[in-house]
Image (cartoon, rainbow, N blue to C red; front, side, top):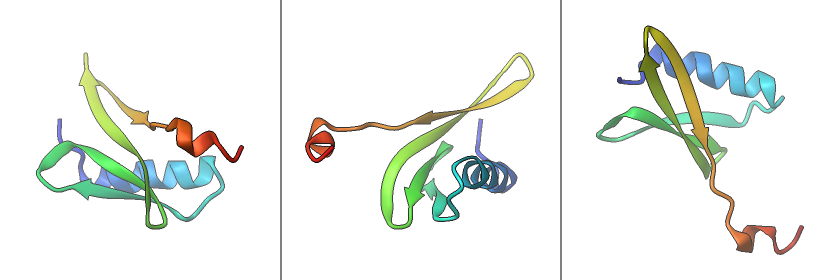
Length: 73
């Protein structure tokens, strides 16, 4: 199911409120219509997929954290 402009606006607004961070943005993924990229300013941080099943819509946020990202923690 395609992610619509309305979906993008609603999910982006939700994430910004939830994480108290207005620098979060959602960006289309070119030819892929079932998902959008999640950006923190100019840094890619994950992907959100739209899933519609039995008349219910949900959005799955997938974020990969590499071991090298944890070295300074």
